[in-house]
Image (cartoon, rainbow, N blue to C red):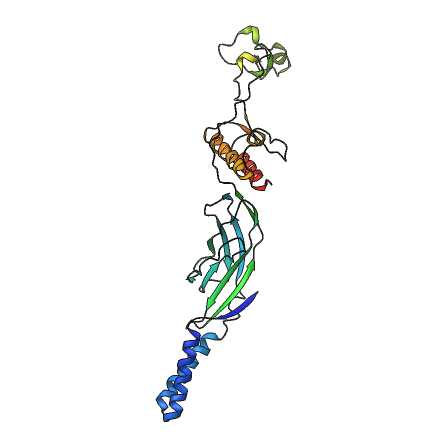
Length: 289
């Protein structure tokens, strides 16, 4: 969608040209006519093509950040056909956000450009629109065009809370230490009694494969996960519960502890850790209602 707007300098400029024309006609001043028509020619020359200047510009969304509420989030754009133009870029405000100040124009010298997203509340948001604007050389008129962006991003709840972490799940005390767990490759010093002779008999004579039986007492016990359960925080309002769960997630990730998340309206996630698991859990918090 394209539009043209008057800049603050337009009306004073028009008033100066009109005064020059009337004054020159009143006093038959050829020099006044010359300046009046010269200024008018400069203005008309700058306005030619202004409306269609943005038609050759194409905008593509490359990347959009998800993050916590009240923190700056960015999106990465790729502009084609804009090299050499002086443009200002902005994200139009929504009824929930304050209207941002008009950005200054910059000369586009590279295709990749970064914009700061308007602050939004917790939830899932569409990328929205980006507005490009350019002015004529004398700053009299502004041409704007709005480009829709395909994409969405998540605003996570602000991590905050003072509740202690839930206890770590305890392993099964009835599990025997001599339970058979599988086979592993033979290592120097292994007891001959634990060699799995059947696997040796089935291996190739040219490349005999010696395997050793492994029992529960030989295996390393994986740390048990914490269950981050929203039901333990029912005495708190919804946003406070989600902020506390977000703080617990960050604590577990910082200490490399496995965890699972269970919300009131959803089944518990599988236990895990790492960036992918963290992102899945935080997105669930952003979508919670």
